[in-house]
Length: 310
Length: 185
Image (cartoon, rainbow over all chains, first blue to last red; front, top):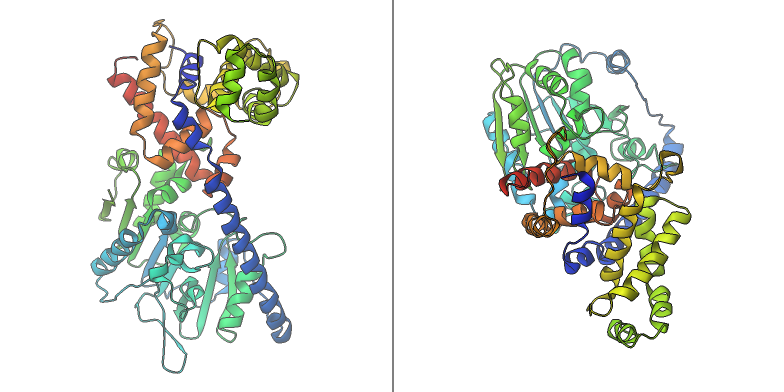
């Protein structure tokens, strides 16, 4: 059999299958959604630009690990715990929110925190002050996990809480009144001319507290682990990620397969933290591809927990 | 004019059938041909050939949905036209890329020429596509039937490029296992 023969045979699929695949309805819905997102982002930008002009806030953008630590002095020996999640919003559209929340909660339970996770790690106090009740020193999450206008997951009606600013969970409480925003260069979200939106938004919400913004280039939050976690002081860490996002960061150069070396780097980066856990979960398919690659690696004493929503 | 009316024109051997088909389906068929062959005269010729093929196929066929029927013909002709072109003439279509991707589903090395009966392969592929989850099935068909560029699929489904590529990678892997299970490989 040749690939051409296969391609020709695929051409003989049922007409209904072929027709359904190109239904325009879904496309239009996404276009509408995206237009709404862009409009909302533009509105936020206008408001925050005014605020930024008034306060003279200037975002700090660091590009390397060294610059990062220079930007945030005092953090070098302060890290004692890290919670890291990314990619959960992949499942918002698939009504898998419950599973994502359960997985996050499960990992939190195993980390020893008695914390009820309802979509946010940060609560507001009576006077409106921010309280880091989760008990982690650092919390790294992807943008989409926390901004309802950006990620499908928290747009889920049941979990949408207008009283909570979802940007708060992107902020990393290093110490009291010292916050760091980690953001990413997602083209869809931060379109040209809106690049400073997250910083400006953070300034609007926590003007005195936000000391800077660390911006990575495109890609998932896990890329941060690749690059910087080995440089961070040791401490327990909990990683949770959907396998698509994980794969995004361990894909081979051609973007299609797995790169074991990359995977190993990632695990080693994770292993730099003691007594932490790596949790990987997938909903739509099995995660055999990941487990196949991961099982032969020497993970030391870092437990790796797999779960699937299937 | 409804599909059944146009098909009726074909059955009556009324040449207005071709004009009506072109009027309704020209953009659709041209987009399929261009997906495979890229922009250029080849795609146009391919669509014209597809109309002629439709003329020859109806009767005896009486398709309920004209668009996928003519679309299939267009696709088949475009795929067959691929190998007639040399590399210099490549027009930026997805055909060559898709062929390379599908080659992953086949054993490396073609030392054994196993000519599979087309009809059996088609039946197996229909069953396989039926086993895919709905969204995966859709992107699989978009990629390997319509040969849509990855970027277009991302836009259509609102997914990231890596997610689409990952889903396609898994689908190809599944397809290979499926073909092996069905003893076609």
